[in-house]
Image (tube, rainbow, N blue to C red; front, top):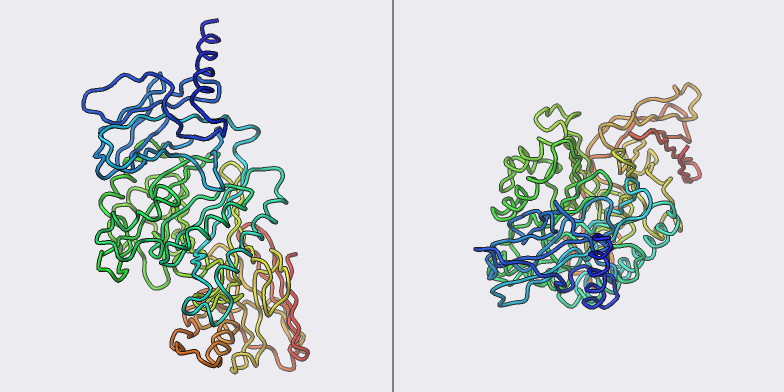
Length: 531
């Protein structure tokens, strides 16, 4: 009876203090005692008005947990702190407003103290199964700006991406779907935030944000000031949440130099690294972590951020203590996957790095293909408990290939004449060291079936054709910008057998899915499918 009365009173108070939108961050309906030395306080409770104990709350630097009454306190420098965030635990819904997750409350400018509350709604159904769309670098610019005049407009590609994600989400009726935009959501133009938010508003699922270098105010004098436009339009730059058995961390690993020209360095500032350590204090070591940033924190072509980025060795050591870590990033505009345990690096054997290609195609060109030959698109990450699988999803209509390519399209095969050296090439854009061998079979009279192709580094022919087409356009004064990437890490080749006129290339990914692509270079036809 006592619990019933408490719940009834809490619900009446809640109804009086909210507008019915079921959002986090409405003003405090409970009386919270002051605590000496603390100027931020609040309450976390569930949809029945029951206080929740042990919920992690942060001001963007410090973290704490709620007590048995659901109360928390922080001693914050309110001249620097702009949000209070709650780490929504597994088993509770992450509310959203117009597509943006609402796990935070804003601290008004000039505040000397701040009080807030968070209401968490219990999740219905299985919380261990869900899907995440990992999206890299939409980087939208005005239709009449610079390079967008030369090819497809980035706004058009962004809108097509949103339609594609909604279409795919509609097929996933047995689980919740989320998105994570891995930075460079816009391109250095604050007017584009309205365009980005308009697109996000159409989504049928919430999409989290990560700040990229082009999302900063490049004219700001300090790194702290440079993030303000992002904060005003999207929200906090460093936060965490739990989905199922996984702990997600989104953070800012771009340190702006404040030079007025957009200069920056990669890595975690001392403040962001401190926040990360404070967040991890409450994460059990047996937890699996998904860490999302703009620039890759683990693995890049030609270098390892762990060794060169600010606080790289420190955050790597910290994260190496956990059960397993998947690092997701954009920024490089290519697909690149690094499995440390298969790279002879036992120091980080529990970590993998994943770079996601640009969702709107090659930078400046906004073509159907990215600079490494990956078709524009995004990763689809399916989670069931601690089982994590992913595949690359080509996005929308792929000009020059076909309309509406599906998830079976995981490689592109080139004929012996395409590169002019007599080799057959295969670009397998989601490949990593845990995939099987890329196997080649042709129709030559003395052919041997299933010959392994050799992995090499070179450019992608389809992207070069896009560059050549752009360079030939009248009035293009920036031809130097359109050069083929010569560092593709997922390219394979082999010499065809004598007399061959067609071939089939097959590969099995790390999750047991087998893909096949066939090419007849007499008729220049290609077909791709998953088996």
